[in-house]
Every structure is written in C-alpha cells, then in structure tokens.
Image: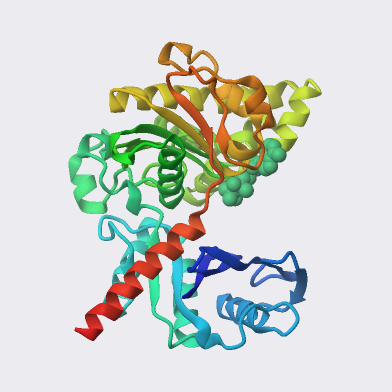
Length: 406
Ligand code: ADP
C-alpha cells in the first residue's frame, strides 16, 4: 500500500510517498513559496535522483497538483497512475480536546476541524486547505488527519491547566495542549527498541530540538507533560520563538511600545528566541559559529537555550518520579554534539554520564551517547514523523476496509 503524507504549512507543502511494505520512502520533497514569486519544488527519489522545478504556484491545490505530476512523471516519478495512492495522511497541527487520536476524514470531521481553527489560526487553515485540495485531486483516496497534539492528550489535568480562572479554560479551551506529538511518540518507541525494553516500563525525557523546540515526559509510553502549551510558543528557547516568559512582562512591553495584538504575536513568534537574544541568527549553526568566534550575545543565546533544556530534563524526571533515558532529535538534537553536551551538564546527580567521544561522533545517525555505566541512558534518534503519520493512516484505512466488508 502506498501512502502520501502531506504537511501543509502557510506557504509550503512537505510530502513523502511511502510504500508501507518495507516502510520505504519512495520519494520526498518540499514545495516552497506558495502564493509568492519564485515558488520552487525540490523533489528527491529513493534512488538519489534529485530535481528542482520552478513554477507559478498560486495556492495549495496548485502545489499538490504539481507534487502529483512529479510523482507521476516519466523521468523523476515513482508511480504510473494516481490510483496507486491508496490513502493520504495529513499532519494537522491542532486537534484541540476533540481529537485525541488520528481520524478518518469525513464531512463531520471537516466541520470539527474548522472549529479547531480558532485554537491554531496560523497552522490549521493551511492543513485544511491541503485536505480539501486532495479531496478534489485524489477523490478515490481516503484521507486521515494525524494531530500534533494527540500524543499529549492523556496529560493529567494538573499538568495541562494554567493558573488562570478555570472559567477561561471552560469557555475558550485555554490549557496546555503540546505539539510535535508524532515526533515524541516515534523517538520514545524507537528508544525503547534500542534499549531492548518495553516502553510501558520506561520513564523517558524526549527532546525535539529543531526550529521549533519541545520536550516531553513520556512515562510508560504516555506523554504526561510537555513544554509547549496552548500554542507552540511556550517552553524552550527556539529559533525565533521566545519560550517561557513572564506573561506580565509582555503586557508591560505592549504598553511601553504601544504594540497591537498582532505586533505582540510577531514579537513572540518571529523576533525572539535565538535570533532575539543573539541579534545574529535563528539558525543554531550560525549561533555555534559565532559563539566560537567570541560573539558575546551568540554565546548568551546558546547558554539560555541549553540551560532551559537542562532544567526541563530535571523537572520532567521529577514529574515522572524517575528517569531511564533522555532522547535527542530534530535538526539540532541530531546534529549538534556541543549543544547536547551543554544540555547534559551538571546532570550527574540524576545519573547522566555523557560519553564525549560517542557524543561527538553521533551526527545524523542513531545511537547511544552515554557511558556504558550511565544509570540514565542518553540517545540520539533521528525523528520520522512522516512514518508515524503513514502508519496511523494505514491502520485507519484498513479498519475502514474491514468495516465495509462486514
Ligand atoms: P524544523 O523544526 O523546521 O523541522 P529542523 O529539525 O530541520 O527544523 O532543525 C533546524 C535547526 O537545526 C536549525 O536551527 C539548524 O541550524 C539546526 N541544525 C541543522 N544542522 C545542524 C548542525 N550540523 N549543527 C547544528 N545545528 C544544526
């Protein structure tokens, strides 16, 4: 069974076509600058064949049409008929409290997805556009929505409630939801496999450190707490998002700088984080480079970034009442040994002992970066959110087929 996995952002569509027998990505790619001048599709086939195409792409439907045509193309394609796509799995950012697991998309689900827009106005509308476009372009293929929030939906109330009037939680759903769920799910399962242990008996802290960064406390396979909150702004320092900040400080800034709600949103989401502190870049590679060159604020940004990860590791150990493993993933988590080392500093009291040589050697691959005697194991696991989306889609489509038979 071939499943198309789509991640539709505001101006981009990421895709993978996965053959479920053998869990093999036949092709993957990214369409960028949708609706802008100079839209470009970067496509890569399983055998290494690569192509970049420029096209006029006014909207998500045109982007997905372009993706389908390259998947079908004689020179760079991997299928000969769009009917070979058995189903489409969509990453949907926010499922609110309605969606705790992945779902088959039908008209009723579409209505409920529309209702979730107010929780994630920057993300969900684009996910919905992708679903609608596929309904038109691949009418034969069932579609499944896989939510970033679902893995965190079993958090206890004392972990997800904020200290604001309870009525606001009831009225507007203001609470911690958490994101990057498919990534935390994947790396926790993979880590259990590498440890040769049942996930049900493990207490793991998972660290997804990319442009967006979040951590989760995964106790017995269940996320019981996570650092992102009502939106993906809370928690760790990120490329351009601030993470934890005193909410009253924001009110103060808004007053002093006469910022509108929109301005404040841009400040927290686009001008903060590594970029805001360093004044140099939102990209960890540049922050590391400039730190080495002695740039004071780049060093400061790096220090804030790693200090927060370290605090959350210890906090989540406390939340779970124990710790068996810490797992790193994401562009930074997979590729930056310096960052991992700083994140694990001073954690010997918890039983974390990094193997510096193993850590330095672990770039873009999976493995252990702790000493053999480290009580708490430290691992690097390249994430694979697309595979989780494809597996959930396959499961749901097969369930649907069984139901139709009976
Ligand atoms: P996204 O969250 O958009 O999927 P990624 O997971 O690709 O992002 O992570 C992007 C981040 O990873 C950027 O900050 C980038 O600088 C960082 N990164 C990628 N490669 C390296 C590297 N070799 N060393 C340090 N940081 C890296």
